[in-house]
Picture 1 (cartoon, rainbow, N blue to C red):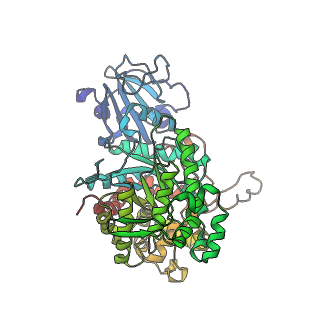
Picture 2 (tube, one colour):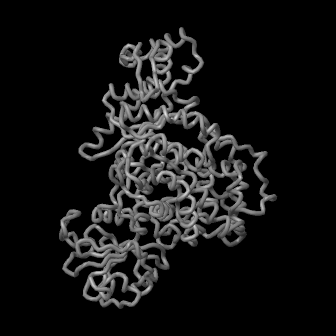
Picture 3 (cartoon, rainbow, N blue to C red):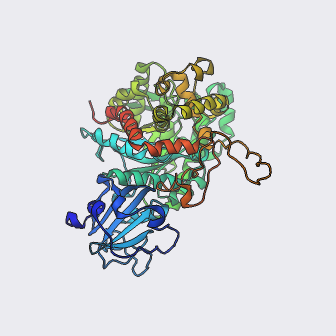
Length: 586
C-alpha cells in the first residue's frame, strides 16, 4: 500500500463521505469528539498491514483510538454481511465498532479502545493472542492501573527479549497481562480489563514476538472461570490457605496424629517415599519418618488443592492450551529441599502437569524492595531447588514478589541455568508514583499522607517490615521522586495501592441554601471514569456520562495520561534493571 493511501498519510488526508455510526450507535460523532483524520497522531510501531488491511493506534484529543483502513469491498463495521475467521485473508471490518468514512478510495474506521474492539483485534492479529511460554526464561510484569504495558514492552525490547528456548544466549519471554485476584479485588478491575489494557499496550508498541498472560494467585474455581473467559493462558494456583504451618513446631507424635487425620490418599504411605533416598546432582535427600511426616502434614492438603484446581482447569479449558504454575511462596517458613521433592512427587502421582513452581525460599522476599538476607545462603538454597526442578521436571523455578530483588538476580539465572520465571507487580505502581512526584507534587504528598494512615491495616496480608517511625514525615520530604528510594516509605506506598486507588471521596457536600445545587469539596478535581474503563475513554467522562467517586484515582490517572512518555520512560529504566540479568546465561 503506497504512503498516499496509508494510515500514516491521515494527517494530510481529507475524507469524502459523511461519517456513519456503527451498529451500536453509541459512539459520538467526530463533530462531537473532535476526532478527524487530520488530527490523528499515529503511534508508528502500532501500524501493521495484515491481509491488505491496515491497523494502527492513534492519540487524539479524546484519547486513544483504533484506526483501520480497509479495501472498500470489505463490509463496513456492524453490517453483519460476513463472519470471517482470523487468518483467512478476508479483509473485513465486521466485529469492530466505530465510525466509517471514505479515504482515498478506502474504507476508514476510527473506533474506541473498548472491549469489543480489543477482542476483534486479537482475532485478526494472532500475535496479540496470549500463548504458551513453556520452559523459556520468562518474566511477568504486573500493571495495576492499566497504563504500564508500553514501558514494559520497551524494556523487554531493550534487553533483547524474544521467545527463546533455554540454553540460548539471549532472550526473555514476556507476560504483560498479569494480575492476581487479590490485586484485581483491591483495584476494582476485572480479568477482562487486565487483558484488554495489555492488548492495547502491546499493539501500541508493536510487539510481535509472542506473549503469555498470567492469571495470578488463583484460589477458587470461580477465579479460574473468570480468567479463562478473558483469555488467560498461564494459571498460577495458590494453595497457601491449605498449608499447615503447625508442622514446623509439632513433635513426632503430633505429626503422626496430624497425618492420620488426612484422607487416605494423602497419608504418608500413599506417597511411596518413606525410606527412599535420592541423589540429585550431588544433593542427597532421604525420606525418614520425621522428614516425610513433616512434608505430608505441611503440604499434603495444599497439593490436593492444586490437583483439584488443575483437574477443574483441564475440563474448563477443553481443547484450549494452557500452562500451570504452582505457588507455595506465601507461607511462614521456607520450603526445604525434601519438601520441594515431596510436592513434586505428589503432583506427579496425582496427574498434575505444571511448567513452573514457586517455593518459599530462605531469606525474606518483601514487597518492592531488595532481598533481605544472606545472598550466598540464598544461592546455596536455590541451587538445591534448581537441581530438583531439572531432575524431576524439567520445570522452571518462579521468583514471586520478585520486584527489585536486584542482589539475587544473577544467582537466580546462574543456578537455574535459565529455567526461571520472574514475577513482578508493585514496582510498576511505584514508578507511576515516581512520575506523579515530578508532575504533581501536591497529589503525591496527599497520597503519601493517606498511605501512612492506611499502612497498619493494609500490611496485614503482606510480608513487609517497614515501620512508620522510620519513614520520613510528609513535611520533611523535599525530594518526592526520591522518596521511592527510602525503604520504609517504599513499602508503605507499595502495600497501600488498593486503598489509594479505591478510596471514596468525602461525603457529598451540603447543598447551597436556596439553590438546590451542591458544590464540590474545595480542591477536588473534575470527576473522571472508574478504574478499568476503556483506555481511550477513561479520562473523558463526557463520552459516557460516568463519573468517579474516588478520592485519588481521578487525579492519579489524569497525571499519567497527561504524561505517558514520562511514565513509560521511568518504567523502561526500572525494568531494564530487572530484566538484564535474565537476558543471557553467564
